[in-house]
Structure formats: structure tokens, C-alpha cells
Image (cartoon, rainbow, N blue to C red; front, top):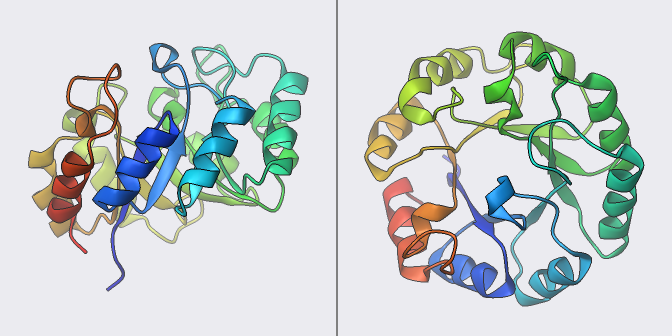
Length: 228
């Protein structure tokens, strides 16, 4: 059985080194958690890339909310990150009515063609998550959905998560489920027993929220709970 994936949000090279030291498998790189995570500056990406050997998934999001904003600007940022060495990304966009903004997703996915990417928690805020999965499920490079099963978090989304895991391998459900959003330690035993094998945290591995850095000991604690 393969090692479960443990992904940690990193804002800085200090975060990245602590996450790697504690046993994280992969990092999601963002800035500005006041806006729920935006695309980091190119220099910050370069500093983190130089600091650790872990795979890095870089957020492609330039405004708060789930609408894409200026697609030309977003694609320019993506291309600059690729030129700097970025190989994996995180993205996902909704239209005003809550449906997936498929044209925007396609444009940005094409800008990172050849790279693996995660569709982030916009899926939890969509008007119809089954329709969203069907629409994006065959896009090249998409290998992960980051989801809590519900907009309000894992507590509310457990039944949805279980239902989607049961559909694994079907069209729209071939991607790995990466559980994040209101994820707590007490969720892990049951989630692991149900067969989930990928987990994502941010604030949970910091001493006092986003104003404090990632704590390697807290990462190690979560790593032990998730398992090897």
C-alpha cells in the first residue's frame, strides 16, 4: 500500500523547510491567506524551490473569490512560474451562477499544458459538483480534487466525500480526492479506515494561525496520525 499524501500550505521558504522537516510529501504555495490564498510572487516561488526538494503545487488565483479575473494576467503569471521551474499547479473557477467556468479553466489549463494540477475547493462552492466534475474530469493534467465535501468543511461534507470515493474510477471521479478544509485530527482515523489517502492542511500546523510559521513538530504529529 502506498504512503498517504500529506500536503501542507506554505507561504514562505521558512514554512517550506519546516513542512519538509516534519514529513510533508508536497506543498501548496500561496500568498495572502486573507483572500484564501493567491498566486505567490515569482521571487517567493524561487526561494521556496531553492529551499526544499518537495513537489510544489502553485496556486493560480489572482483575486478573492472563485471568478478568474484577468485571464491574460493569470496566464502570464503561470508562464513566468513555469519558466522559473514550476511544474505543478492549483486552479479552479466558477461563473457568477455557481457553475464551473469551463472556458476560464480551459484557458488556464492550456497555459500549464504538460503539468499536473489540482482543482481546488471551488468544487465545494459550486452549484452542482457532479456537473462540475463531469465538465472538467477529462481535462489534461487534472489529477486531484481538493475538497471538504461541503463549503463549510469536512464535518458537513463526510457523506459527500464517501459517495465520491465510492465512484472512484468512473468518469469525473478518476482523480485523487485530497481532503482539506475544516480537517481536524479527530477526522483522520475514520477517513483513513474508509480508504482516503490524501490530506491537506494549513493553519492546523501553525502555532497561532496564519501570522505564525509552519511548525515542524506539528507537521510531524499530523504525519504520524496519517501514517506512512
